[in-house]
Length: 418
Image 1 (cartoon, rainbow, N blue to C red):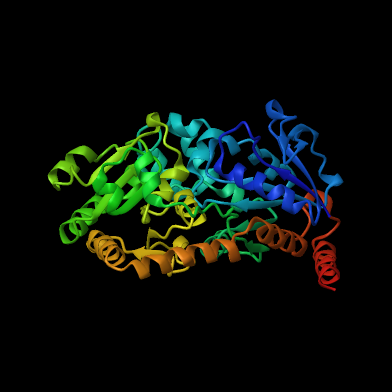
Image 2: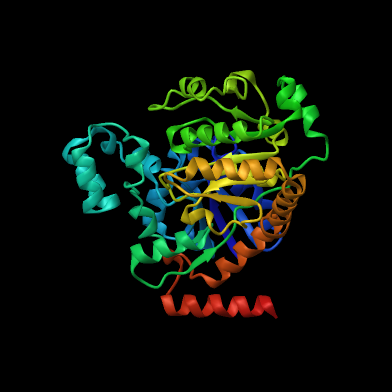
């Protein structure tokens, strides 16, 4: 099988693109893969082989076209290709608001053109929401209602998604039988055996943080990350167990919440520290310093959280919001936190239980390592990707009929198993 992988180039900052690049050498153990990137990035090497411009993509030369796509502006160049060639989309996010704004600038300008673009990309309800909103990018609370994803979820031929929840959403939107494979996010094990207290000392944390129970959140802090509920939970836990401390690894980018003010209000000045990007701390060091990580979010954007997977890949347990897209993560390493009035109380309960029981904490970390090793190893994910591609029809520009394509895909899968 020959596969054309459409992705961003290594020089482009792209979480989804990095995952795709990580898979390429493993995919090449099973199929032929050529990578295609935007014209200005052509020639950059991916897994040791120069990439090609998407202008050179000839769909008839490939058995499958695979797009690595998520809610990133850098992926806007893929939409015309999906519309023209079809293919299989490895879809990482349900809400594609940022992608849609890059592909359709009228969405940010507002007015009649924004309404028409919203109608095409999101349907009547989303178009009306855009018409009523002021020009510009809506606040995070509004984005969850603006998926703006129809160019993707209605025009591709098949999909690879990270969880069953997104599979159900695509089927509901298309209202038609559609080949959709569930493939976990690839993660490379990056845990360390060194003493985490040495890492805390190297980060310049005070002695109480070095010797105490350290909770870490990595990534820029936005309103979407429920930081107010996290801080209130930290306050409860710290009051019950003064060894509990909290480290924020990222810049403060909240629009509605005064984080330093809330820290003072909760009397947490001695229990909370922030290390911003300017201080140059390595994300791996921040996670390794943790006893547990916390990554709440809401409202749901329907995507796989980078922070959650980075924590698990480094062998740390994590607290996650009890959202549909998180419910397929193993509960023994990803502890659920409900939204609403019980949110901060649940955070506090989980933290105090872990802080008082080293055996429970060790079991959570062992479960994280087991999940990454057994389910998310890139070689395993690559095999699963190839299996899904074999069971999917060819892109519509390279098949004589849907029936023949489906029969050929089934025959190829049977031959592979034999």
